[in-house]
Length: 184
Image (cartoon, rainbow, N blue to C red; front, side):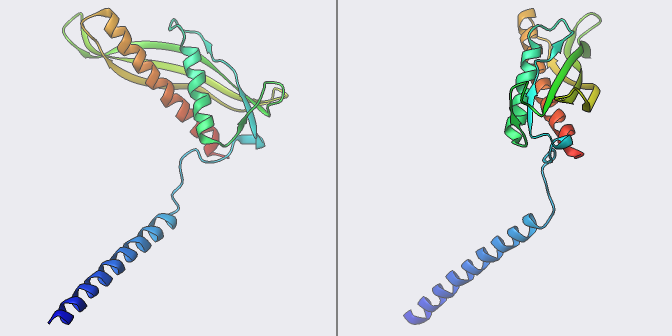
């Protein structure tokens, strides 16, 4: 009787190992053979291997966003790893951008003259030029928006708006990198 019980336990353990191995093989087959790739995983146009990112021009009344937008784009390119950074003189390509406009609109009114939620919208023009000045990629009128809560104080509302602009900057950086690398 003891031998039979031991034999049954060993058989159960072998069965569990076989099931685990089967699941592992199934995962490997499904996830390596499905053709999935990350968006924006391609290369930069015109064989560009190194870039310089200029500080964005800011044509809006939102102070300091040019630095935030530039830094987020640099971060996204660094994270992607498809190109290296170089000085302006030695880079294959130069990325430049202009923050053309920003504005807010009411999303949820709280009466005739007040809002409980607003949306900030930012529009940007971008281009990638070769070191000789030839434009190899451009995107005009790229618009990104984000909603934010209107608080009881102006200070808190402005802080909420600033957080929304930070999210816009991050979204824009991802979008720009995807656009730069998806078609080449």
